[in-house]
Length: 380
View (spheres, helix red, strand yellow):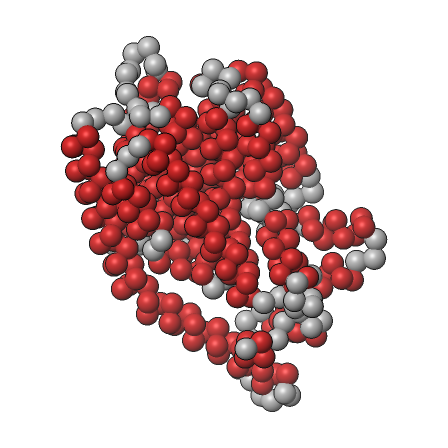
């Protein structure tokens, strides 16, 4: 926001909006900060940013609930989805402003894009909405680019060949615009490390306290289940898996491919342990868990057996959700103390007093001098 204010010409302002942040062009993330500041005399209220970011998680949940309604499935699946999605493993996104908007928001835009992609065989106009949300995803976080190959594959398999070609061409244009001027950030080139990191990312909700192999194995199991439940889309002549809703299956299939691709992108830019253990990344594992639950719910089996499976998922996810609150609360309190200590140290600096080291000292000082931030109690 400071750089945007200093920019004189429209071209300079656009450059600021699209300047890469690491390997990401976080245009929509910056837009949220700018809107919050624009409605508050230029100062950013971090609580509003966090609220907007975490509301996107409710938006994502609403897409999953809509899929359950379209399948006309039992409420127990909605409970399972809720307890998988609303738990504390990815707690960083609840107090890390940029992460809340970027790391959660990306999955809302991916979900909306994939949902519209699944509707294209019935309504070709949905392709435009899918494309718009695909652009939103891409310019919220670089991982959003995965929606374009995922969408192209899904549309081709669904029989919408013309739409798949149009989607591919449009996606290539967006990706080329995105990548123009972005420096290569990859850290890993080993196929084994990329495979381990991507599988570990998908299974990261299982944690790393027992070592990296549990999440990696969990990720492999998740991918195998996802592949098995969607084999009928690729091998329709040989494999007959009956589903309650074909559009929902296409939606889950597209989203599932996007999540696997996301895991590969993260594992190329982070080592295996970081891909598994970084708290704010674990939202991806929760999303994949929801997709698997919905795939199972969409498979046609007897109503009684379906209810029992859904109930088992609901009970398991409820227990898991409770355990994450129990496990993460001390960690969250430790993080809270760290942030409060940082604020106190910065307060001492502004008063000209001796102070302990300040995390991101230069950035804080720049924003504080520009009047874009103040101490939390000043706004209460």
